[in-house]
Length: 69
Image (cartoon, rainbow, N blue to C red; front, side, top):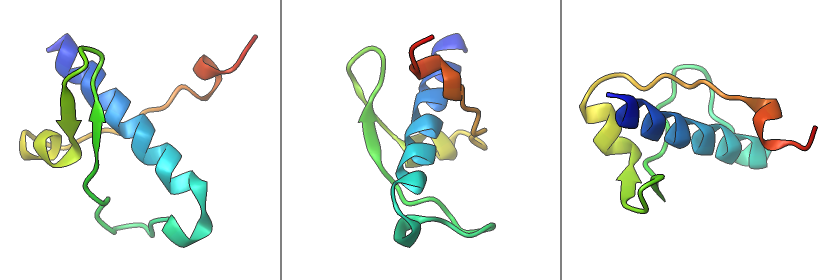
């Protein structure tokens, strides 16, 4: 359960980062996110479509977690 939540968080963070890269790639409210694949914390690939097949994915980001304090 905890690993699944962590993988979903990583995927969500990547989705948010990808959406913020450029205005042309930004999603409108209600649009489906494009499928993408990233390596999880265990090094194994994880696809967004694999996560959404198991249920909804919650986007939760820690903006300050990746910045120096």
